[in-house]
Amino acid sequence: MCDLLGIEVPIVLAPIIAPVGAPAGPPLAAAVSEAGGLGTIALWLADLGALRSRMRDMKSLTSKPFAINLRLDLDPDARLDACLEEGVRIISMFWGDPSTLAPRAKAAGALLMQTVRSAEEARIAESEGGDSHPQKKQRSDSDDQHAGYLKQLRHGHPVGPITARCHIPAAAPVSRF
Image (cartoon, rainbow, N blue to C red; front, side, top):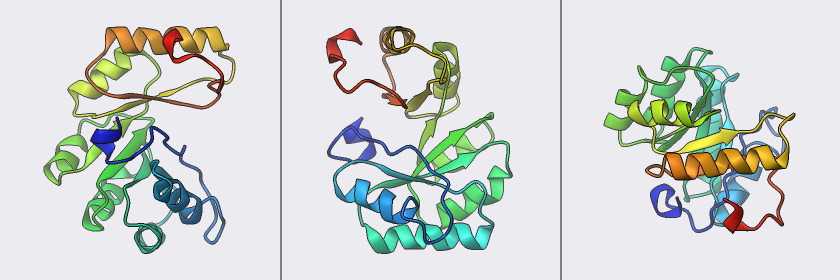
């Protein structure tokens, strides 16, 4: 995963919606990128002017890789175009079908991360051009269910990198997965 994303440590910041000027926006994402992880900012509620401004803020704070997160059910076409025009090379997507956006993103040289909830969704995401598949854990899942799901993905879908979001116990041995 690190080689694919151009990062030093396998840490991906979960996208956080934050008001302009809040520390959880570009400042936090840039700090994660500067520390060797992948900083991510959620820009699916921003108008196009604000979206471009936040991306430029990120580029002024770090020269390291970062991702923009887009919701596929909220006018993703114009947002994807803006991301690609601004030179963003890692696009994280969720809640929708990326098949119409993937060819444009891939043609521009961008990597795609599609959030999935099952091994089947991971297979579909990869067939549609996804490069990495962040797994979204529901709050009601137990740690054992989560471990089982990651193991299922790892052994049933070994091609693309798998990242996990939310609530993974820091002390869980890697061998469980």
